[in-house]
Length: 495
Image (tube, rainbow, N blue to C red; front, side):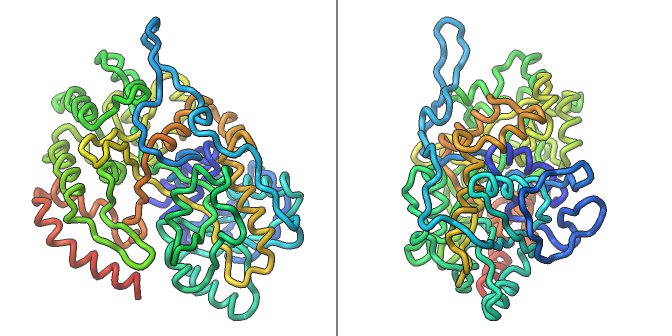
């Protein structure tokens, strides 16, 4: 799974910074870390100036668990239909929700050495983008320490105790928070940045999520949806069905339409499937809840929440006993082949649609957000989100430079300030239309942060939804089976 996740970040990065999305919940382990050429990259400290990629460096990339630079506001219709042509146009995302057009000034100006803790090879493509952005904006270099997330608390505690303190710590809202604040390894960031500045506006929901004791602890660089729908345009054209992206532009891409399409496009006698899925993480979040909600002091199990019961019933009805859904844990290449061949109409999974820009340009594939679950509270379009950014280490030696670095990375998600990330994506074939839709998707979705992912790899969403779907158990029996096990996992995490 980590291999799959690493393979798509740079493309989403091109979209936002990323995140992804920098990498999120499944951090690299020592044996799977990105490597330079074929050599194993050991943990350690590397001083990096303005780094340029070379053909001999690793091509592994992290998962794309973030989609664009924006925040959810619950609106539903994002396009306007022309009465003359019947087509739907989408105004630029920033025209709907303007974001800051400049990086906040820092006083005093940043200078001196900076050390940032990350879980990857510093020459990974997205980290190179960060390094170059920091150099370009502030004229400064950065030193990286590579530490696996599992070892991070212990390493940080040792450094702080010895006085060998780094400045910034890369983190994920669904893994490192609230762990690091509770262990007193980092400090609040509201004395360093104005969290209400327009520069941070579209990631403000995640900054607010990072609060402990009323104080925010993360400078969020990127935030966006985790799951999307990748689909075959030809299948929809041949069936004379309006494709999901067009429906989304009009605010009509709903769960009911998704189920209707899944049924219409399934013909098991011909091995044709309306939907293929390796997970249903994003669709679970569509109800407005995740299996777990992390608060600053505890973890709330939502398995008996009516919203979860409702969406699980609908997922089971969609795919029970293999009806309408080809259940398989597909890698990117299998997913690609199934869609291009027409075997599968829609695939539910992480946002790896951007891994195949040529197929998208040729009209063989496209992608859309997860559908709006019309039974969700408040009529909002919820999507499962992830967010990543930086903690300020306790006793950081150069906090001003730390803020500067976080702002430089954040700038990669704001193309009006820094288009380097998207320019890289366009070289690979991704389009302005794709990026604009990704921005709009974030603006028009209400985020549900994927808190259950913090239990991976011990737990996966598969454990819970697979029991009633693939094993024929009832949802109630699955809840009874897994609630005590999940409670045990939470207690271990808190200990």
